[in-house]
Image 1 (cartoon, rainbow, N blue to C red):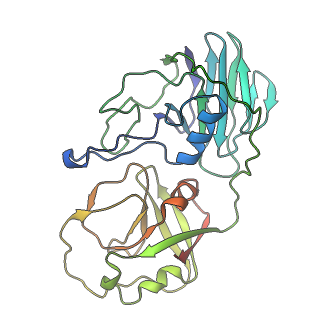
Image 2 (image 1 turned 90 degrees about the vertical axis):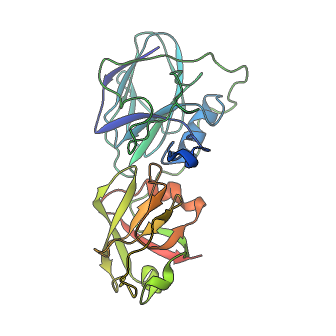
Length: 284
């Protein structure tokens, strides 16, 4: 068992989501940075899709109710076992009564805590993920919550630490494919010109962008667009002209034109972009 002692801005249980429910109006959800969760699970010997904790910016403190094997990946929040600092993306052994504490991440947005055996709460529609848009799945964590841990797998990790470079604060380059509604814009290539900046209006649903340097994205067609399906990584442009990059908890349909879609390989990096960070799009 794990007891939650302290929570920062937001901490939720996440696995790799609940595919297969679009016909019921339910999106996939799951970890915003899928690669970071997969790595944390590999480090502790779990299947990659085991449920862990997604931590926004840091500030989480957990206490072990028995011996636990954990790993912390994603945004490099300073990590401590009791008062001892530990390295990022390393395998941590906690004895009963010991605490794991995360400070505030200096770069990146979301850290991931995996425990050997996974967080063993009841799944909803086949997933233990919290979908913040629909409210499906377990509630965000609060101090005093006690989380059950599943039985450990038979296999065991063969590494003590993963040499993973932390997310940087430099301009982020994101690759995107134009379409499906790029013909609704006077110059859709304006998306790739200059720089954008991540707005403070960003969450698990999507990252809104402000124009920093370069021409605006102007609509050529002003008609209403019938509601249509939207994919993870879609760059939707509302009337304000501020693009929104859809992330893990995005709606499955939308009524604003999608000028381009971020390629799947770059969605995780976009999910780690924090407010104020510069983003450059590159045509794929």
